[in-house]
Length: 101
Ligand SMILES: Cc1cc2nc3c(=O)[nH]c(=O)nc-3n(C[C@H](O)[C@H](O)[C@H](O)COP(=O)(O)OP(=O)(O)OC[C@H]3O[C@@H](n4cnc5c(N)ncnc54)[C@H](O)[C@@H]3O)c2cc1C
Image (cartoon, rainbow, N blue to C red; front, side, top):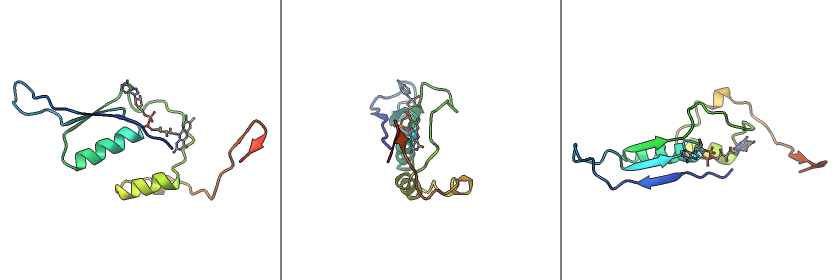
C-alpha cells in the first residue's frame, strides 16, 4: 500500500478576521489525506481537506485492510469501528498470466 497526498502549510492571513483561516490545506481525501488531516487536526491545526471528487466516490478496491494498515488505524484509535464489519482472512493468492504468488 502506497499513500500520497499534498499537504500545504498556509501562512496567509484572512484580511477581515486578522487571523489565519486554516493552518493547513490537505489536497486529496484518500487514505493518505484523511490520515494526514486527522493527525494535523488532533495536533491542533486548523485543517481544510479538499478533493476534486464528491464523496462517496467510485474507487476500485480489493477491500483488504492489511496488517500494516490495521496497525496504523489502531494507533490512531480508528480500527475499532471497522472490526465488527470485517471478515478476517488468513492469507491470499495473487495470480496473473497463469502464475500464482
Ligand atoms: C484496483 C485496486 C485495488 C486496490 N485494492 C486495495 C486493497 O484491497 N487494499 C489496500 O490496502 N489497497 C488497495 N489498493 C491500493 C489503495 O487504493 C491505495 O494504496 C490508496 O488508495 C492510496 O491512497 P492515497 O490517499 O495515496 O490515494 P487515493 O486513494 O487515490 O486518494 C487520492 C485522492 O486525491 C484526489 N485528487 C487527485 N487529484 C486531485 C486534485 N488535483 N485536486 C483535488 N483532489 C485530487 C482524488 O480524487 C482522491 O480522492 C488498490 C488499488 C487499486 C488500483
